[in-house]
Image (spheres, rainbow, N blue to C red):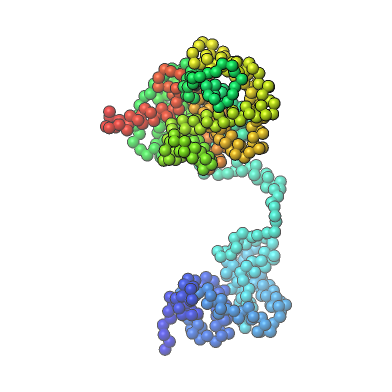
Length: 574
């Protein structure tokens, strides 16, 4: 009487582990059972034949990979043992394949019946001589079937087979058929979720301006502050001994015109629900639309930060009949915070972190938060300080370059005289400051700006470090342009600066802003005439008091009023 079979061990070595191989594999196919049976008969292995004869052998048997490889080695030499040549085996296989085709042809072509490759391999083996073990695999049978039927039938690989057929092609060619299908995709793709309206001129609309005049204003500001310093020897006879030009914000307050009316902040109804839920966003948008209708306004304008803006846009696209007069804006405060983090990611390890900390202006942890876009006000001021320090070095090198290559005479003396006159008018706050500023900008644009462009090209070709930090100055200039656009209520500058932020979001893998900022800009370029004219008058920014250069983003206005009040000692009941 034989002992009961231990199905938890390998059927070959009768152990749960073989050397370092502890993984037991299950028999997946009848073909594998057939090969094991043939090997057991050849070896005269009565114990294994006894296991095979038991019910549910295929479901219960396990083996080690090394054990089955060692046990089935004889099959590779089986053709030589039997004495059959390769040509004889091929003829036998061809005869068996012919019988297989005859048995399945009617069911396959006429009755449209589907067969498993494992079933077909069993039929194929049954047509072979009884004493002839075979190494004919399902992959080989699949190739036989593909060659025989060509495109008449569809043959799909089973689990465990190769899923991708590799060819020898080194390139892909798009024929006319594929191109036509590509053109039809926008019309045939199933609408799994709402999508933005398709625009054929989106790229052209995003290319707004390549030249920003506010760059001149900031460089003139640096030139003016340098008059009282001994860093550069200017060709001006009168020496300015006291620094009277304020920092960037104060300087722009002196130049800026009076702002529009003060914004009135009101508290809307509270929605006690998860703000990220689409139903909550829909309710907020519907209430905003209803309040605008009650106030007699034709359009409702609502601002969201990026996370809620994405949900709100999908709500608007899915309900165009309800929200066709609803204008959604992306929060500029959060967008600029993300842009500051992008600057930090690109230049922190290149020396910006060390510059902020080693200068003694900011502590290490504070600088780290600034570079991550967390400390907003400190980050803006810190980057502006670094910008001024680098601009001083830039202008000093520019003056030296002009004198070395005999370009200095191309800067007229009128520029230096008007610069000194502008410095005096700003300090004394005279009424002629605006006219002098206009003349100075014209001289700078005509005579100095072209030379600065030539100097930058020379510096980029000469020094990679020069190019690296000049790119930082460009990024900080975009930051200053964004702040100036909101403070002054300059709608065109707002759109221009927003479009210039886009490449940095892509560089630093800011996926969400890379995806939704273009949607926002394109929407703002297609505003109704009534709303666009109001925005051009500066009515898109928030002003909490009557002053100059004090506009803020609408999402920042919410944080400074409603959200700030709701975080008091007794909350919103205060």
